[in-house]
Image 1 (cartoon, one colour):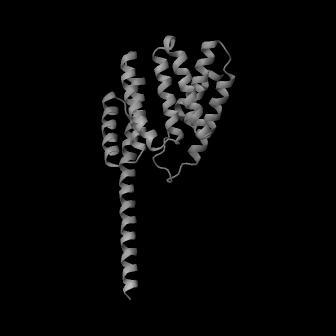
Image 2 (cartoon, helix red, strand yellow):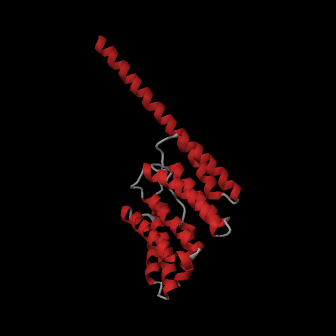
Image 3 (tube, rainbow, N blue to C red):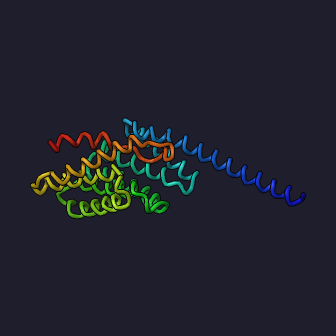
Length: 221
């Protein structure tokens, strides 16, 4: 009888712990989805900063979660591309992006999406001063994007960013765009597959890039 009572107590405690963890995860996911939507829809530099502040608070409260650092990285990249004037200002935002990305990679070094963002950062640094940065940052960007694609060949964002790098390089070298357009077409196929396969199993995974990739198609006609 005593053994039965002890077993019931252990089962109850375990069940309570599981339910508590699930409730905490649900709360985390709900909060993150709200902030992610803000990151995707922000139209001012101030709105991005507000989202970043929230993401940093979530990261501090939920140790071990890489997603807050991912979206803080992405938000800083968007600030660099949309609101930063000049190389120094862009670099400031990209330095902050790399700080967040470093933390995310420490938590999840095998996540393809993180390496795709690394390639994105290097690409924006290159674009800020292509004349003097081309050789260094093009190699770094290609290396990170190749790693992202090797980890997940179906990652549409990694493929889209790779197409951008290939296209920029081909234009600079005076080459045709067939290779970059083939990569772009593959990325668009993977974006469509991602759209069809959207699942609640991974509610916080990145979903950006489709409209940007679609806009690049004009250069392949």
